[in-house]
Length: 486
Ligand SMILES: C[S@@+](CC[C@H](N)C(=O)[O-])C[C@H]1O[C@@H](n2cnc3c(N)ncnc32)[C@H](O)[C@@H]1O
Image (cartoon, rainbow, N blue to C red; front, side, top):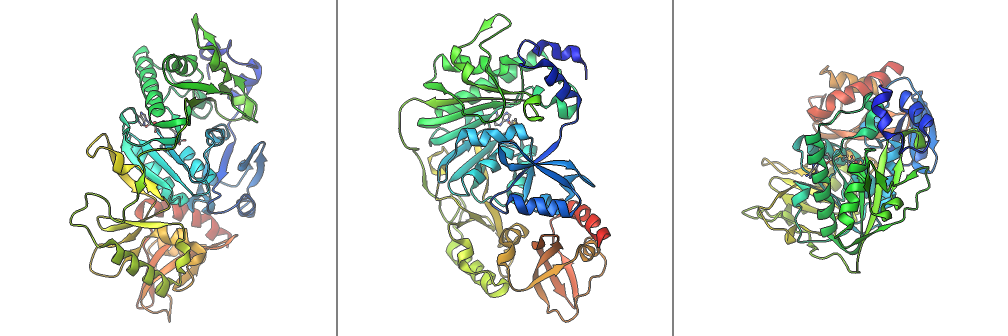
């Protein structure tokens, strides 16, 4: 990596030699444990049983650092099954600094691929609402994959331009993790991204508009956290400083336990609002991770979020209205009679029918009724796509629902070793003599017991799996290693 390209940042950085030394060594892989599904000890034990050497991360109790391991940690069962999210330790501070509480209404205005969205949902213990907005359709697919994989029913995914985010409803807290020139990720990418003047003009304008819209949709007294993963003050303090000049917000000090440097108040002849000194700059040497800028703003006044209404059982605009209550009753009856799932497995959750699917979600209220129909937004997902109602047969629980239910699936379940899974995924004949024809939940046996990964069908003593195509190849990699160890 060229040192000369970095020299521009020398006046900003608190410990230049440590900064450069960090950039010149590989970045350790860190992961955040998904507390909605498991706990740190279970993940640690499972990884150690697979030959990984793992340690904790100071001041970040939900993070683990991979010290050494036999393979990429992304090809482990825990990752495939959503027990953890591979995430830079530096970015792990954002959810805590936003301060989201259980039951609150939160907006993540630039959400994909979803590391912070999912961290927020976990911090809220799955209660309340996280609206995850994203403009890029390709990245929305990655976001959805992560929401389903981690099994997070409190996330409402919206496609749309955050600069035009609908204004009808207000939020307790808004995270605005803006697109940026990503200089803080150079350690991962190996070089400093080069950005034209045109790009910088465009991106800083977008950052300012996103921050202004974030403030607009925050309730009086609510919190906005502005985040970038870049070092240049033009995308950080300069943007916040311009907004502070006329927006109804003040900068709040950050109670940040991890090492960091303060915001800078002047840069290349430009002087910023002195309040931006209360922002935080995390450099790669601080956490042996990436770079991050964070500034927390408090909106003037006091008030409650407005514009929220009860979530309907049928998606508005679906015509003719499908009989959602009958579908829910049939689904609950099937899950209970066939899979032995007790009805209290869904306590605190509700269902919504949209088209030929039933969605399982944990929202008590939603903002959508307050938004202008046909505006710059589209609902993509509400919690988990849980049941397929297409066709004339009974409701079909999806792989995501069965995986979410996991140990609550007690009947019609086949727990299979990695070797049998390898055969199944390779399309080889897997015989299950004496097993009746019909749907089965399929478990994968591993060091932490057997866990449901999806569904299959038994016909004439032969088992067929129905893992979605997009996740099958990945599961095949996971079971390959474990099958070899059997
Ligand atoms: C820094 S990334 C967000 C990372 C994410 N918060 C996480 O923790 O995984 C910025 C995201 O903003 C999205 N984006 C860019 N312009 C946007 C806009 N106008 N509205 C909404 N999202 C936008 C990008 O596609 C990108 O996914």
